[in-house]
Picture 1 (cartoon, helix red, strand yellow):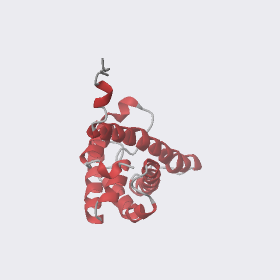
Picture 2 (picture 1 turned 135 degrees about the vertical axis):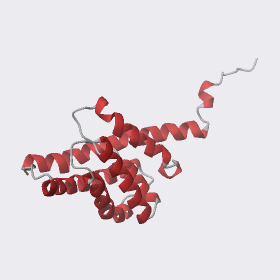
Picture 3 (picture 1 turned 180 degrees about the vertical axis):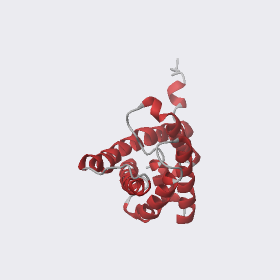
Picture 4 (picture 1 turned 30 degrees about the vertical axis):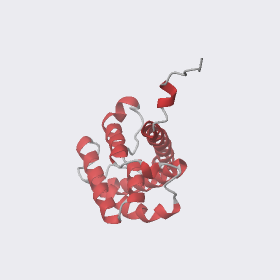
Length: 177
């Protein structure tokens, strides 16, 4: 549909904005702010560039977050990218629903990896069925909804403005006399 026409700085700015200010808008929900951006970048970039971007995204989350040991998000994002990058062939870049589904896959993988890393390094995490369902099922569904609402709708608006079609709505309808 339109995702390949959007420059990568635009989804990156949306992800950075949400990672910084997202807790203000929805304080009780933890979303993976960079998952849709990673899904988009996987579709366009090589594996090496995607891994570097994942490292940068994970490092930025490490910097603004104090929940886990420094570096766990970076390692988690790298492992998630290595695991999910080659799954891009199953998702078509041009469909907004594909972005949401690919985001859900990235989020579920990241949540599972983060649980394992947290158990290895924090030693304070107790696994339960509720925790697994919450982190590996509910959170990816919320991330997919976040990808649709926070990314595809602004993309459509961005392309609508770039196309110039908005001008006809603001021009006066002059009727011939």
